[in-house]
Image (cartoon, rainbow, N blue to C red; front, side, top):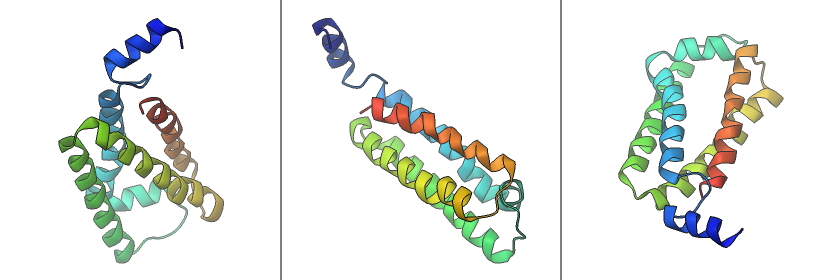
Amino acid sequence: LPSSAASALALRGGGVVSGSVWLKSFSAFMGMYAVGFVLAPAMVIEQNFDTPYDKYHLFISRLSGIAFLTLIYTFSTMETAAAVPIALTMACLTAVFGPIYAELELETKPAHKMAFLMAPLIVSGFLAL
């Protein structure tokens, strides 16, 4: 990088993307899914998967949503420099074991492709490091 660009990035605290802006975007994106899992798990399952659901699916969906919301809150209380790498790791692992696995191994509906909006979020997360 030219010295002026390096100086500007150093002044901002590092990455090309602001860590605090990325963390807020991550929190909004993942938070919307988490709220859906807590408040309307049947709708989330119906929209994304071509399978019937039962009380066990609803139970584990709500529990997962609560865990995600707890993590998002925890990230908001941490220093941004510490929270961003952890949240980015969470986003990467969630993408692999969530949408990517589902597309390869489960019967999904077209609406499930919306989960791949995580890709730009993950790329911009690496730019925030």
